[in-house]
Length: 315
Image (cartoon, rainbow, N blue to C red; front, side, top):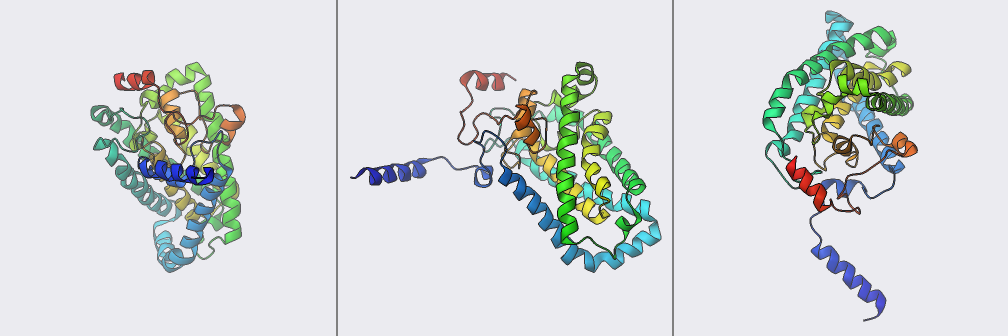
C-alpha cells in the first residue's frame, strides 16, 4: 500500500499490541526534558476550582454551625480540632488507600519495579510517623492563630474567586522556593544530612506513610514551614488554608506511594532512589539548577538497565 497507509497500519498494530497504559500515562507526559508548565497550571487551576466549589456550595450551608462552634470553643481550640480532623482524614485515610498496593505487593504501575515493601521496617517507622503527625497537628494551628488576621477566621466573609487565585499562586510559589532551598541545603550540608535528613532517606523505595518519616526538626522546618508560609503571607482565610493543607497531605502521600498514581511524574520517587536530584515540589527550580530528573522506564524514556534492575532486586 502507499507509504502513508502503511505507516498508519503500523501505528495501529503498535497500539493494539502495546501494554496497558499506567494511570499516570493518561494524565501526564513523563518523557519531557523539564516540568510541564501546563501541568503546573492545571494543578493550580484544579486547586482554585476545588476551593471555589467549597466556598460556594459546601461552606455557606455549614458556616453558621462552624461559627457557633468556634464561638463556643474559642478560635484556637476550634482551629486545632477541625484542622486535626481534616489532616487525619487526608493523611491516614487517603494515605492508607495509597499504601494498599504496596501492602498487597502489587507489581503493576510500580515506579521502582522489583522493590517490595518491608513491612517490618514500616512498623518500626510508625512511632516517629505518629509523633510527627501530632507535632504538626499542634504546631500548625498555633502558627496560623498567631499570624493570620482576625478576618481569616470570619465565616461570614469567605474569599472570592480573585482572592483564591492570588492566594494559590503565592502558595505554590512559596512552597516551591522554600522547600527546594531548605531541602537542597539538608542534602549539601553533610553534617545536617547525617544528623537530620538521612532518617527520611532510609526509605529508598517509599510508601505513602513515610512522607512524614523524618527528624522532627526537618518535619517542622522543611515540611510544615513551606506549606504554611504562603497562607501566612497572604493572610488567607482559614477555610481555604484547611483545604490546601488537606490536599497537600494527599499529594505528599501520593508522591511517596511508589506507584504511578503520583501527580509529580515520579519526581520525588526518583529523588528517594537517587538522592541527588529533584529537590523541589513541582520541578521548576530543579529544571533551572539542572537537578530535574525523571525515573527510568518512564513513558517515552529508557527502561531500567539490567544492572539497575539487578541492584534493585539485591536491595
